[in-house]
Image 1 (cartoon, rainbow, N blue to C red):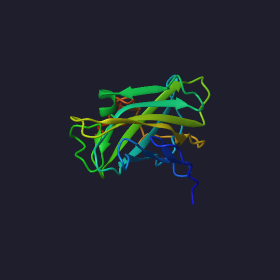
Image 2 (cartoon, rainbow, N blue to C red):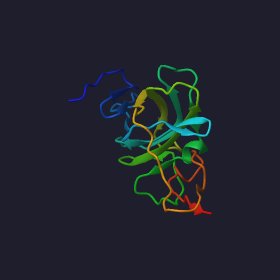
Image 3 (cartoon, rainbow, N blue to C red):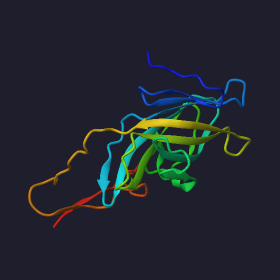
Image 4 (cartoon, rainbow, N blue to C red):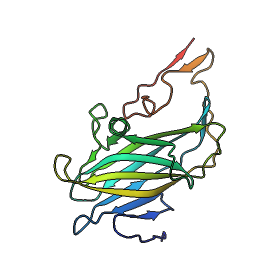
Length: 203
């Protein structure tokens, strides 16, 4: 059985063995409940002059009211003041999709009761900086209908362990020619967006 640590209301129950957490809000009698999971640890990849970490966060709403993701910050190891990335508003809409939804439809930061959404994370840092052992996340939710009264709740310090495995080597898809990949990977690229349209060309 994985070890669970109990925190006061409005915190979460981390499950380090599964890279998941449950957020408990105290605004209502039963409380808000959301589970966050990282299904696969990110492998550090060299991308030009940067180190990139590409992974997914699966967010499950186990509550009876909608949950809206308002803000997301990612920190390296014990750092808690200067995030590697801070995302809100339209930036979040570009990297989130509801499981089972039309991949070409409009993304929403609001997760309906009983639904799951996936965040496609793309985090970078300068190449010379030490690779973190853990990426820690601070996620701000609003519980309740977006058009009505909502209570803000924060999931603090959700950890994602960085993999020590070497990055896989991708070779040319076919023999001969000089190959290049279209659309450089980033949070704004279709390489990590819900509707991939990446291309490869030979010259």
